Image 1 (cartoon, rainbow, N blue to C red):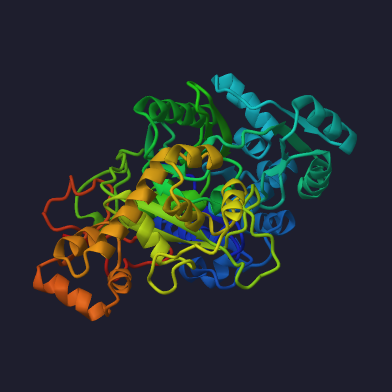
Image 2 (cartoon, rainbow, N blue to C red):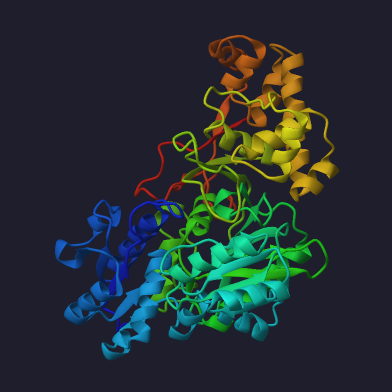
Length: 555
C-alpha cells in the first residue's frame, strides 16, 4: 500500500443526466468508504448538492461547486492533497485532470493521479493517440485521421468513403460517436465536434456499423495481476449506441476462441497503459475470423461497470479503491457480506442471465426523433435477472415502459411495410417490433440479415412466443403454468391469457406446489459459500444496504 497518500481529492460525477444516472455517485460512496477504512481523508468536489457521497464526507471536506479546472486548482492549492481521483467523475473529471496536468498544476503541487498514469490520461480521450497505442499492442485499428478544419474533414471523409464516424478529441462533456451517411451530415457533425473538443479537433474514421458490440470489464493491480469481471454483449449491433441497446451478460453468442482473444487483448491494453483499478474496454466484432477492433477504453466507472457489479455481485468500486492505493488483488479481502474468506483475486461465475432494456423519455417529448442511432437518447433502464435468457428478457420487459399492464404487448397495428422499415431503421419500440415480426412468420435468418442481430436472440424470442401459445391453448393447465412461470411469464400475464383473475392463477400454483424461490447473487455462484443457504448481496449499489428481497425464480 502507498503510505504516502493520506489525503485524496475526489472529483464527483455530478447530477443525473443522459449518459449516466447515479452509478458514478454510487461508486463514489464505495470509494470513500474504502478510503476511510484505510485512514485516508477524502475531499470531494461535486456540483450535485444531492449527491449521496456527500453524506460520507465531513462538511469541511466537501466542495459543492462547478467541476472546472479553475475550481479544482484552487482546492489543490489550498488543501494540498496527496493525490487526485477522477475515475468516479466520468468524462468531465478526466477532462479536468487532463487540463490540470497540461497546465503543470499537478506537478507543481506534487499531486499523484490514481488509477490512470499521467501518460495514459493524454491518450484515452484522443482516438488518434489511442489508435497509435493499439498498433503498438498489435490490435487491428479502424482507418481514421485527425482533422482541424472543415476542408480537411471533407477531404478525409471522401478518401475513407461514406458512411463515416465523427468523434471529438478530448471532449469537455460526455459525447457520442456520430454516424454520417453523406457530406452534409459529416459537416454538421464535425462542426458540433469542434465545439465539444478542447483542441477544436475531430477524428474521422471508417464506419463499422453492423459489427457486434462486446464490452469487457476487468481489474488490474499495480503488480500487473488481472481478472476479468464479466463480459457484456449488446444485442443490437454497432450503429445503435450501447446506452440505447439491449445488453446481456454473460456473453451468449461468442465462441471460446473469440472470448479468449478479446480477453487477452483487454489485458494487453491494460498492461500497456499501466492502469490500476477498473477498466471497461469496448470491442467491435466482425463476422469473419480475427475481425475485431477496439472502439473505446474507459479506465473509470461508468454505466457498464455498474451493470457488471449488479450482475455479478463483485464490489468493483470497493476493490478498485484499494487497488488505487497500490494494494494487490491478493491483499484485498471482499466485505463480510460475502460470508466466505476470499480475496479480490476472483473471476466471477454467473449461474444466471441478466438483461438490460433501456427506457426512453418519448412519452413526454413526443416531437423528438425516436430512431435509435449512435447518439444516446435513453434516460434509464430496467434489469431482468433469470435462470434463462427468456426469463431475463421477460422480467426486464415487464418492468419497462412497454408493459404497463403486465402483458406481452402487441404491434399488430403496423403494416408490413412499416414493420420492415422499423426493422431496418429501429425505433425505441425495437424489441416489440422484433417479436411482432416473429409472430408474422418471418424467419430467423432473414430477420438477422435485416437487423444484424445474432440469430440466437431471435430463437429465444420465438421460444417466448411458443410458450405464450402453449399457455393460451392449455387454460388452467398445471404444466402450462409451471412452464410459463419458469420462463418469466408473470401471474398477471398468465391471468390475462386465460381471461381470469390473478388470485385464481396463484391459487392454482399453491395447490400444485409451484412455489417461488428466491436466489441471491454473489461472485462464485454459490461455489465458495460455507453454508448451503444462498446469500443476498446488494443488486443495486446505488444504496448502502442490500435490497429487501432478491428476484424470484420458480421451482
